[in-house]
Image 1 (cartoon, each protein chain N blue to C red):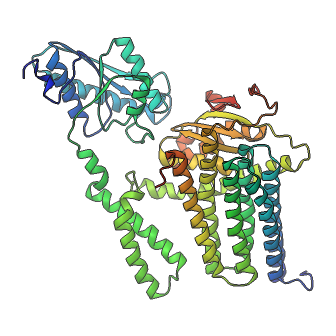
Image 2 (cartoon, rainbow over the protein chains, first blue to last red):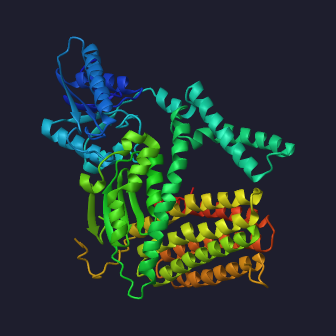
Image 3 (cartoon, helix red, strand yellow):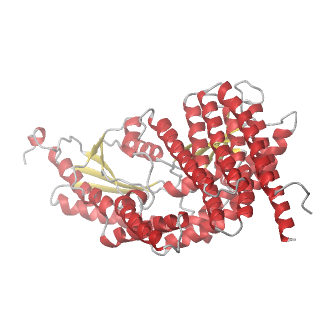
Length: 357
Length: 110
Length: 95
């Protein structure tokens, strides 16, 4: 293609320093290819900065493996760039971002990219449409929105998307797992409401559960189920409930004592707490547990940053000691992940007074 | 004998349920702002409903109806904090300032 | 010792009466406000109270099918919670 051809083609990028954030998606290969092609289209020489942003702090037990995976991804991507560039002169720079700081949400990612872009005089970011920082956990808001917010130019790579398709359908065993889990959950619920010994309920229940699982299984489970982990998590969740009830009873008594006293010595404060719990379901469980415990109330939940309103000092201390957080980490990540410093010791707590911004 | 124990267990459970719901009601009426009221509203959802439904479960004994009460409690536990959070969040987004002890804007209590 | 003259059903009905009184007290907050969120919160507490009252009636009148009604009511509360969440997050775009 000629150097002037960019006006009619899809490739409308005029840049010679590109930033490509990578994550382990099915479209990452195509994104890298697009970045190289579009970069070489306009300029004779090209500098490609490949970065992987790590969502976890390096000191946490599970993130050592993440770091290794990220380095592997970087070296793979470097090979891809060299493959695609052929004889053209391409400078490659690979970087791991977020090793020394803790990135919470899309905004932090966008800001990190922005800092990097300014430091290295980047012209354009080429973004993978499937970009997910952190290979397993889903981010609640899109990075694109936040990139817009920090005012950074980005270009979404026009990729074929097997991934979008795959997310709905999944491969056969994943699909089966979801149907299986959904069928037994709905069948169990039906029989609890009905009579498990009456044949009519057994038959209609199976029919209803079949319809429900076929129509709703892919809506209910937006994450892949793990055949070993999911039942273990359910059991650990069962262990968590007595602990939660004990916490609730303690907090109820403390709050009742305050409310019934005629002087009502409440000290409401807004606090911000950065939790080490990622993703939809664990965060939901933690935020709901915090709200369920009287004395603490989750006002905002942006990824891992919870804004919690506390009514009395003792509830605030309990929150900062992070008992519930550790219990949730135990439920979703196992026993060894539960032994982390309290939010107070990590410096992840902040009292922001009456204003939540 | 069993009947006597059961009677008193039910009375105690219902009494505790009424007590915590009473505290919660007093809180909802007395406390100064929406955020503080949301705290005490969760007392009704947890121990108030919890003790009362436990009393019902004991009365029905080991039969089908007792499973219903456990399910009921489960739904209350799952849904009400979600609603409380939604309400608090919408309050925060519509710019309602939390009440503080000094009642002025210098809210850093540390 | 069960006190004479009091049956377990009467205990349930008495507790149910107290819950009704408390629900009426909460209703004050639903009427007085001052903000929409205060009213919503009060209605939410009233919903929980209603579920408990229905369960107490089921035991007091020995009509276990009242529990079905309570369960449906709890599920409706859940729908209300979802609707409120959607409403606050998406600014009016309910479902």
